[in-house]
Amino acid sequence: MSKKPIPCLVGFGGITPAGRASHNLSYSRMIYGMESEQDKLDYLKSVLNLCELMPEDANDKDSFSKSMEKEVLDNTLMRKLDYDFFRETFWTYDYDFEVNACAQLPFKLDPVKSYPSRQHPKALGMSILGIADAMSDSGLDIRNVIDKYGRDKVGCFAGCAVMNMDRYSGDGLFASHPLGQRATSKQISFTLPEMPADFINAYVTGSLGITGHFIGACATSLYNLNAGVELIKNGKSELVIVGASEAILGPPAFIGFCAMGAMATDERMKNLQALMGEGDELNYRNYCRPFGDNMGMVCGESAGFAILMSDRLAMEVGANIRASFLNVNINADGNKKSISGPGAGNYFSVGKTFKDIDTVFGADTIKNQSVFLAHGTGTPLNRITESHILSTFAKEYGIEDLPVSSVKSKLGHTMGAAGMDQIWAGLGALEKQKLTGICTIPKLADDVSTDNLDFYLEDRELADKKDIVFMNSKGFGGNNATSAMISADLTKELLQRRYSEKDIGKWEQKRDDTIINRNKNRTMAIDNTIEPIYEFDKDVLDIADLEISKDNIKTSTGFDYKLNSDLKDKDY
Image (cartoon, rainbow, N blue to C red):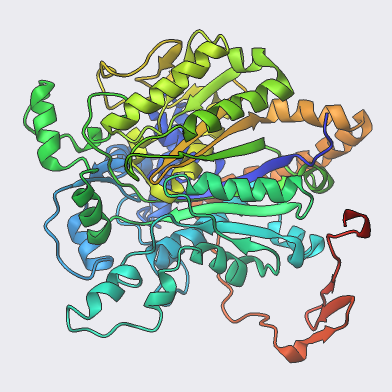
């Protein structure tokens, strides 16, 4: 086996339409009917506390939470757009929407109110809350790890697929002149798609390392994941934060997507419900219908961040390794009839990802231990093309009934964050061995390829233990990305191939302490006592604070950074 570093996932967090992504809290909402009474209670409390709806003087917070169960469920995941709240809080102008279904953050959550923000777009507020959530999930003092490892060696890749577009960014900028208003000095800056990474570096980690953002339309999350995975595999970094934050529930995005004919509008939904005999009253929960009779996508908003470490660093610090990634495969579509039309690229990315698992773990692992989280946009063209891709490779590998689902049925299409939603849902599926289903359709559409596939149309326990979650993204313009998330158990098998029993034992001993701390952090996540990190104007370095030589740079804050080169004479 190659001795390339293994990119290990040691923490994941975010702010989603289900609530906090850390500690499987959002996933509890996805499979709510299958959860234990304690997990249900923990979830309800986490949402009520996050949205500051838990009375401080409540004598019995458990009873109050249970009494609010219906309200919490009604105000999470896909539902009717809360027009008045969005208009008052995030939009610059009124707009008569053709679409009134979306997956929005729980209740009337405004993330920028959780820290001392200064006219920040919603997506950046989601980023600040989300990265703190991810650090909590790790059970480690991530910022201390970064300082010890070296701020100049840490990577961060995060951003959005479209742009930040509320009144403090794109929407306010573009509407200012037509409305006779003056644009602010921040609005153009805040439209930049890599701003979540910039905020994490500047106000959370103080990172001096490699940074950026790889945009690939709806595949953006997996593009950023690829950047982090490759950085670790080639040895340039041993700790990388990857993620995305997208908040597009507003007039600009809706106008644009409706003009494309891509959206599930109210009129289309009403016609479809009549055709399906589902009555006249619009069911906003069921607007997104992956692989069923459908008529367009539904937008959502979400933020998610994964903390990756090399296996070496993860073992040294005693990280709780939740999963790992061998590879991310990215392929363009090649020649196309139209920029939005399908192409051949996704066959390559899916096929290569199957081959990755086959090479390292063998075909039996693919055949018996795999689950597939499809892109599943809820459009007619997607259901035809993606199902054919999955069916084709399931046949090739002799899989009789590959479990298939799509989280967009409950979360909507969160654009750049869609792949991050797949990661936290995949973690939940592996750790709970329960798969969220496509619960918005009564049956598959007639043109869906079904051979060798088992589409989960309801939340179900997995029949046999699964250790691989395939994740697929098909982005507008021909951006295709596919990866496989490997379970903690299989990742440990990889570690046992390259480390001694003594080394494994030392890691597990340290990890036990991390898990104890992580359990404490889970309680803090439920109670909403995780403090967002936003260190504005702290330890800012000026030229006078730097002592520079050809071999290193020292700072007045106590850091000594070696100016090492990755290049060797023999390379050239």
